[in-house]
Length: 203
Length: 161
Image (cartoon, rainbow over the protein chains, first blue to last red):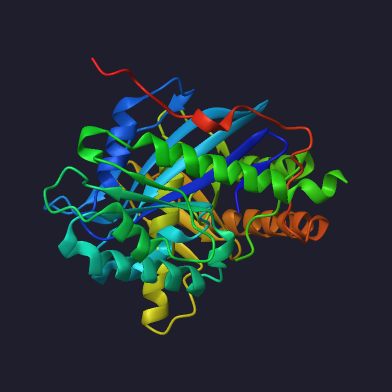
């Protein structure tokens, strides 16, 4: 649930980048931090990582835009640590989440990890009493430049096989290709959701 | 998970007043009310030296991690966490399931006094949030007056050289 402050005209939303370890979640945030333009305010990228570059707790990037006229819209982008052992930490980061970008690793030998991580996401949301069907999410198939990348159709079959299919994107995050599209799409889904939620009050 | 209720002017004024009282009575530098998911709800005091948004995100993570440790050692939770520093110290106080108070104060100020007055602020804030929740028991946002811009491309990439 986004935080809305009618007094200060602020809306704060939390977007979490989720997915298996070493899949490119942190790279997404780094690229957004480096290449984003025309935002009102961009904070520092905070990374709590181990010496081997693995995210230990989370990465955090605050960005402020004017997505709704007259309202400051503060986006807070987080990543989770992907490695299996950090599950408690992932649950903590998911707290208060509004939308998710699931970053899957396109390499064939990472498919089992992708599926496991996607299941883990659903389990963790359930543990936090979220209804997965209520949380907007998009899929990002990363590392498309690698020679052993699985076909997109196969990844769709594995990860996008629910009754309602979600938007999916291909990316090479290390080259900042396909990084902004999933972010814009999740933002769009989020804002549409909020507007629809407020619909009954209009009537 | 029930989140923070929508806040109106009256709520924010009350929260600000509670924090102002705390700062006045204790000489603490800064007080923040934050959502345990990370966002900053309100802030008072001298902030020029602190990046409040990032502090809020880190404080929420740190507090929730400590709560998770508490559960694993059979504690129901730690209501306060105090971190002693050389120049500044920190006090985190649990307000309710969703919200946390963070006080940043000079290390030479008595932590006992800060804790005492922080407890009063916690009660005030908790009461006001309770009122806000009663006002809108079902989470909803009035976006009627909001004018959403073209959301298809909010974040744009700098052109490649």
